[in-house]
Each structure stands twice: as structure tokens, then as C-alpha cells.
Image (cartoon, rainbow, N blue to C red; front, side):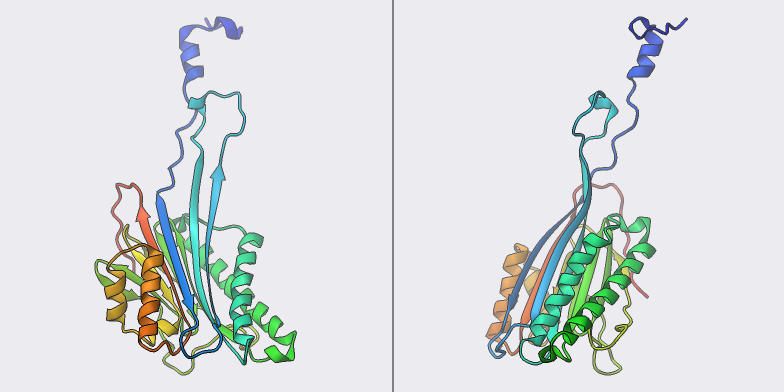
Amino acid sequence: MMSDDHGNQDPTWRAILGKPVNASPLPSIVEVDVGARSDCGKVQAHNTDHYLAIRLGRVQQTMATSLAAADLPEDFEEYGYALLVADGLGEQSAGIRASRVALSAIAHLAIQFGRWNVRGSDSPADTIEQGELFYRRANDAVLEASRSDERLAGMATSMTAVYIAGIDLFFAHVGHAKAFLFRDGALIRLTTDDLMGQPETLGSRVGGPKVEIEHIRLWSGDRVLLATNGLTDALSEDQIADTVALRRRPNDDCQRLIDQVLAAGGPDNVTVLLADYRIRATSTSVETVWPV
């Protein structure tokens, strides 16, 4: 018979009470190392490019408790990663302002609408919907800034973005900046050019352009490259692939690409952002899911 007195419980009941309540949650398995470089080039007077890399996450840490260690999960953290490049357009310094405003808007929106899903497979539709919202808000921010001063009239910007959540990568772009995936020695272009005419931009019209956000699965060892057209206009994709294939530190490979653009004459601003993606430990093989 079991006693109501906690000090006189029989061995069976004591064993039940001492059993851990829950298993620990899955540890964070994704690591992303990021490097970036930007240069004005040899011809342009101003650099209208900007770049941004943000790490967003969820964290749980036990600060104080009367529970036994076996009753609690280990301190937990996992992250998602937002990577963006923007190339501003406009007279004099207006282009500089346009790309800065667009990326600044994204950084503030990430806090204001902080429902980031750091496991993309759980709800890809929500991640895509939020990405579309962010692009609309960035478009509004550039439009509002252009109306604040007549010297900024007509300014606009391209913006290419990727979001890494677990094994998922979401990518979108407006304008002529590009995103690539480097895997198994091959450089694969993710974004596509607008073949119907001039690329659309953020800030060029109310409501902004339609943004297509697509999704692939990542493999451990993948490299993700974002670049303004200052890189892709000066170097072939084979030249870019040869450089990123060397797999030096991301910052070093970014600088090497910039140096090659400058050696080729550096006719435009050039910005490169490179991220190395690794899965620290997993027993699951992941197949690629390419966008249609």
C-alpha cells in the first residue's frame, strides 16, 4: 500500500516519481558560415550596393528550477538565416539610399513580425507568405523614401534574398541580382532573368512587383552565393564556379571574386555574399526538391 507521506513511499512509487518526464528536444544541427564583400569598382563614383545577413532563432535556457536535471531538456537553440543583396538605382546618391532603405526595412520587419519558422519543412507555406509580405513592405518603404525628397524621386532597387530554415532554402528576387547554389562541383543558378523586358524593381510602383518565392532542399556541404550583376556581368559562371570550388573561408572567396572583377576592369559596383551550409549530425538522407 502506498503512503501519502512523501517521506515513506514504497520503492515502486519512488521509481515512478524519479523517472524523467520527457526526452530532450532535437539539438540544432544546422551551421551556416557567412562571408561578404562589396566594392565600388573602377568606373562608378558611388557604390549603390548593400548586403545583409541575419541570424534568427529560438532559444530555451533553464535559469532556475527545483527539478532534477533529468526532468529537463538541455539548453536549446536553433537558428534560421536570412541573406540579402540589393543594388540601388537612381540619380546621384538616390540609388545608395534605395538599397539601404530596402534592407533596413527587412531587418526591422524581422523583429516586428518575429514568427520566423526555423524548420522550414514544418510550414513552407507560412514562410513563403511571410517572405511575400516582407517584399511588399520593402517596396513601400522605398516608395515612401523617394517621396520624402525630390532629389530621391525615381529611386528603386533590386533585391535578392534567401532564407535557410533547417534543410530548406527559400529564394526570391526582384531585379538583376542573382542567387546560386554550388553543389558537387556545379554552380546552379536559382534565380531566373526576366526575359520579357527590363527587370522589375522595388520602389518603382505602388504595390510593387509580383515576387515568386521558391523552395529547394539543401545538402550538407552546399554553398549559397548571392551577387549583384557587377559580378555576373564581369565573370562567366564557369569562372565563378572555379573560384568557389576552392572552398576557402567565405570571406576569402568573396574577396577573390571581387579581385577578379577588378582585374577585368570593374565596370560596375560588385557585391558578393557567400554562405557555407553544414548539417552537423543527421542520419537522414535528403533528396533535392527543385522548383518547377
